[in-house]
Length: 273
Length: 142
Image 1 (tube, rainbow over the protein chains, first blue to last red):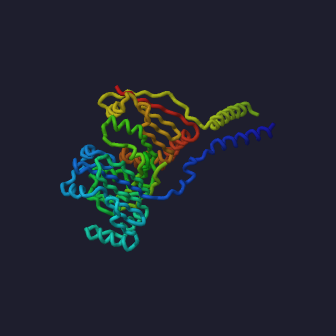
Image 2: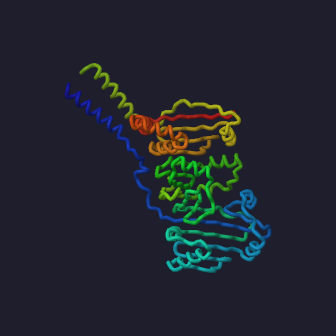
Image 3: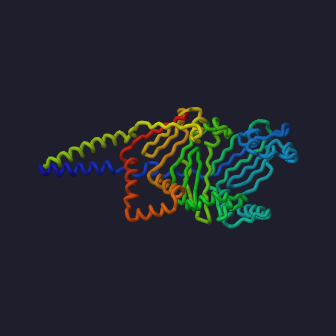
């Protein structure tokens, strides 16, 4: 009898241990994401109509752009644009191509010499690049897949394609001045926001939007993942009249930033699910 | 065997078997009755609810880490959390919402009595990993 009791107790103990041995991480977290080729893909399409002096950008009509505060083109710009049927700038990790009216105009190979020339050109316009900025520019160029397409057409432009695998490095100094990738934006945070950041002890933050999924981190601590559903945003966009245009482009885009306050180290974050 | 011990073992056995069945079924969320709230005009939430084209918005919380906002049978937003990310959010929010003096007091108390931190974590993990519930909050705009 005693033997049976002991056996029952041991079996029960095992059952309890088994039922409580629940894995802390889901399979999604245990298995790392597969190696996906990194690229910073930007496809920006602009259409313009010299006859009506209107233009369209990222699928938004001239009226929608005006409502958002987009500027008008000057007569000089329209004069230049009317001389072209199309203009495209293609930048990838190997070269820069400039085409006009479907004819190749210029090609620059992205070797160390040509990049240094580009940095000097930027520097001559008063924007001297630090070694850190050059390093960051190299990171962006190494993974670049950028197409800027400007077309003489009365139709709406194509939606924006924006998939950036590289996080934008944003630095905010003690006075609230914002610099992106080492370049001073001329923009400063309001004092109330700076006070709020200081009160919360926030030194660094990282945020990524990928196909409607928002991942974020503050001071190295991961926050819950937020998923914004396109159908839901459609309802809110229509009901509140936000004028966001074609929402599909937002749900097929990826953009992330790592923000550092007061010189703190930048945080990294994984984008997507 | 002592009668009480026998009874305890039987009860424990029943609980373990019941939980075993619950575990095999995939630990489904046990739905609790929905809580209804009325939101009156003038409230910011009222404008948001009515702007969705419906007079009702539902927030559904499943303790295995899912929160969903639904209006007009459309999912608006979903939040996925783990105990760790939830704690991170609570820590961050407390820095903004709780005065520094109170935060220091809580910190001092938790040094003397760690149960203040441990107990909520245990409860949170219990409902996250062991037994899951589904709470539904329905907001009606009037």
